[in-house]
Image 1 (cartoon, rainbow, N blue to C red):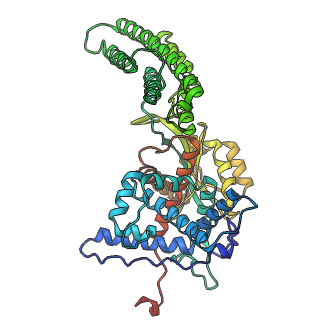
Image 2 (cartoon, rainbow, N blue to C red):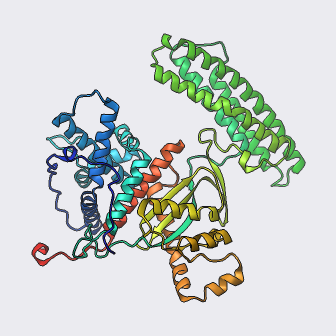
Image 3 (cartoon, rainbow, N blue to C red):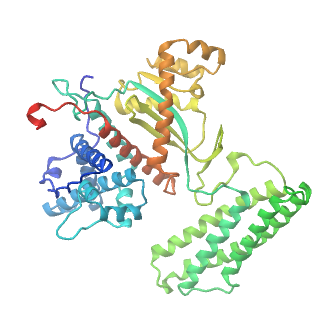
Amino acid sequence: MPATPTPAPLFIHPSDLAQQRVIRLPLPIVEGNCDYLEREAELRRMDEVLIRSGIEDACIAHHIAAVRSAAGAAAKPLSDRRRATIQHQARQSLRCTVARILSNESHRSFSCHLAESALLQWFCGIRFDGIVHVPSKSALQRMEAEVPAEVLHELNVLLLRRSTETDEVGASTLGLAEAVDLSLLWMDATCAKLDIHYPTDWILLRDATRTIIKAIITIRSHGLKHRMPAPERFIARMNAQCMAMSGASRRGRDGRGGERTKKKARKATLRTMKEIVGSVRKHGQRYRDLLASSWRETDLSEREAQRIIERIDGVITQLPDAIRQAHERIIGERVVPNAEKTLSLYQPHAQVYVRGKSGADAEFGLQMLLSESAEGLIIDCHLLPDITSDSSLLMPAIARMRQRFGDQVAGTVVTDRGFSSAANDAALAAASTTNMTLPRNPEKMRQRLQDPTVQKLQKRRAQTEARIGIFKANFLGDHLPTKNWQAQERFVAWATLAHNLWVLARQEQAAKPLAQAG
């Protein structure tokens, strides 16, 4: 593919990168373990890609720009020592986060793993002066959070652009055997699961009770007290009602009692739950107001006190809707539309994603659209705040990718039947995009599959299903580990960048000249 003009996603001033590269200790020689040797070769190749693609330099430029922006226009110029420190922190933030996502470990586990592994220390640029200094779990979490999702998208665009470029003699800029082709894409939607339990209505009342009571216990432990029964008793009473509700749900299955008896028991239990959570709400409000007015009398900082207040407010404000929802479904025996349901008190943006598949009829999380190149690179990974039809996602995704990569992307698009519509067919034709989407009509689909090209591309679509499975299982984890929308969008951007680095590291490399082969 001919070289593509590549505007830098971030302005990089030469003085920001003017420092000697850190000299890293040589890796130990390991024999007899093929898996380790493959892992070492993979990380060495990723190290090369990070440097040659300019991602590392762009990340450093962002960190320096952020420091200068925070300091203000009247701040003094950065000293050489301060600049070198920022460069080291930026490089370590990028490499540690990518390595942690590749390891599919928590911050705590990866911090321990990093302390044990000389290979990870080499890749992450850990300094060694007789003592191994590795970042703690909190430092790793801060590293991940200090890079905005927008910057991560720009870094991924820069990586993909570099992978498509060739030099004057036609050699890949990143040393690939063949430059990446972005003109052919496969697209599919899936559900990115959130870290929530199954959203049973009455469970929300239990969650609210536990959260408010634990906040009250924390406030009391710091010296602020208001007259009330022992807080732990409310949790014990609510747990007893949860067991009663579970027992009522099982009635009738073993022949004891009928459906009517089961409903009466569930309604009576829910009424008791509503009384408990009503009392807990009043106590929580009183303690919340007490902390807001008297936090200076405690050993809590203002930020810590505010965090406790926000935790109580977040539950109390959602509690009326949770009570109404449980009342409507259990006592009123009425259906609550999905759009009006509260699925989680802690992640209110969670959605019901009805898939109709075996073992996954309905999932709870966020809709995610993924676009894949022929090489397995993720060109676009987009989280959506609301569940929408697949057909409405197609053209916005193509417009988004062409804005980032230019008109050479998405020359041919392959999707399943869910993306098909008459409007999309017309829009794809107007956008000069070859439409390889299968029609919804079964007869038209059979006719379309008579074309060998369509048949071949649709058969390849099974690999996109596998790509989604790999991405969700090995990079996102069983569920998104972060809580709020902004952090989840950022984590998906990190995971996309780590995935593409991993895929490029596994691509066939260009043959080295004989003079370098030795």
